[in-house]
Length: 419
Image 1 (cartoon, one colour):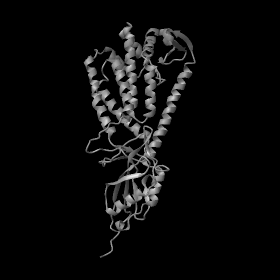
Image 2: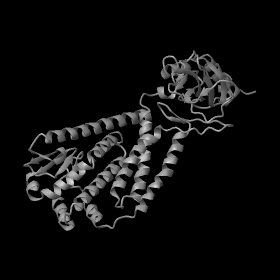
Image 3: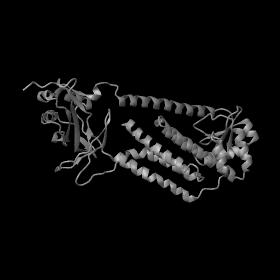
Image 4: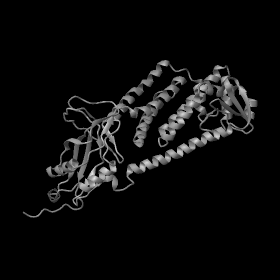
């Protein structure tokens, strides 16, 4: 489920951002820091997809399909919780997420469109290495975008060397690809402050790298810092470009005057290893993502003669899908009269195998409540039609399946007749 995946990605980004601010953000090895930032963002996107097997020989924690809990009342109708209202909490969260993502995507595309429009205006000159210089009469902060540099007539007349060297460094270091990648990440992670903050940190490192390139060309440090201060009154018009005038000017000036960090400090990046390990362990838990909630199930699997899969490429499916299965259970489960009379409630969990041919086999009571409730749950599951079997590596396979059914009395408990 996309929403659950994005939440996992968001948690990874938050952890990585905190580590970055704590350990590396004030160091001067800018190329390493840039690679570190890009790496943790890629890791955040990849880690939720990695599944580790935590199986033990004596007790196997299985990742099985879990049907959202069926609620059975004394009147006899089994009501699936997600059918009670189309607007479940997860449903609302999903709708909000997609609306926000759509708006973020519109903003992203609008920024791209504005950039391309701007590149069609002004006087153009060809620089070495296939770079196109766009000189505009309007006053704006210089910036670069892939192999284009945009600069005002005044800046081109007054300070061409420092500004062009700075922007050419952005292009040579391929910073625009980083910015484009980060823009896409923030489209999907629009809700997550850590994604935006990591993007800001990456842009900051870009500026450090470009400043370092300018100073390595022999430009006077004081003269260059004064230029930055004079240009700091401009506005950052295009967030998808590398701006010469970046907001955190104080940090840039301080970074130019700092002593070079010891390369040994790069070992601090190893602090990300335990975070990765924790994420892998968390994502390896036997969880199942349903349309309404996450259900965690861990039971010992009974011994079987054939190989029964815990997770496959295509999970077994009830004919007609999940909604049809919920409707089948709703229509067929009855609250045992004697159990209702004696105010017996509880949650029965059934565990079984969907065989290669779709038949239900090896049905077990994984969690028992009462013999009558257990028997009713077993009766209905045994009466279910054959499933569409699960498939793995192109073949039909046997797969573990799990269904929780809650028997719950509504209203005041029924009084038993006097003996």
